[in-house]
Length: 339
Image (cartoon, rainbow, N blue to C red; front, side, top):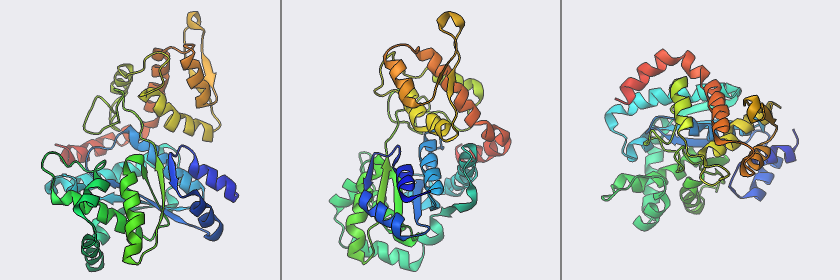
């Protein structure tokens, strides 16, 4: 794969890169660059996580070493109870590799890193304290405002969160940090403040947040807005049937967003079409090669929302098959982590 193809693979489905020029230089000068994504171990992972799993798979195909930071201490800083931290880490450790397996990614160049395995070192904690001496309360709160749940009575822990996330880039030894666009303020905080510590800026790559099933951001705390990885086939189908999907309307449409960012991305990579099954009296089965074709047909009201929903439910159930094969073990871990 040449540099242009690798660049385009990394760029697809992204919302912003800071900066594209730096990424091109990296691809030209380093044989195997590295990237990381951090996920705080708080709520139960849901199908929205497939957005970043697919992007990390893109990095893998582009020749990167991929690190997934299971940020246990960040979970605690964002109000995860300390007494369930290890149990939730165990659940994330079990399901995240299966998410990569579900999309057919090669696990060889993926490394799962536990945050506390290096964040409690003397050097890391000294750097955190050092960064705190030149970071204002205002800047720390502003950078974390879209990620940390501050509430009406903000805790000091939320202000530490962006400092540690910035230092993770250095201590993980990566060239790129990738996250959702909601992470943007923290990623820019890192670019601004790491040089003050004598460390280099990293490239920051961001993907959009996709709407949930009720037309808002997909949220682990709202069961109606998302599909859990352990939901059975009937629950998945029922949730999709009840999803917001107004005929002809694309905005805030979680059904279309998941098709675009997950299902059709997988289909395109496998050179497969999406087939939507319909009775003959409603036009019979119809197949689509690209998401753009689906969206155009939906806008023109040539594709009924219920037909679209049923096709998506089938695809999601296929994607979750690997979790059902490991269901007994995963349910046992989840029961202790999320009582």
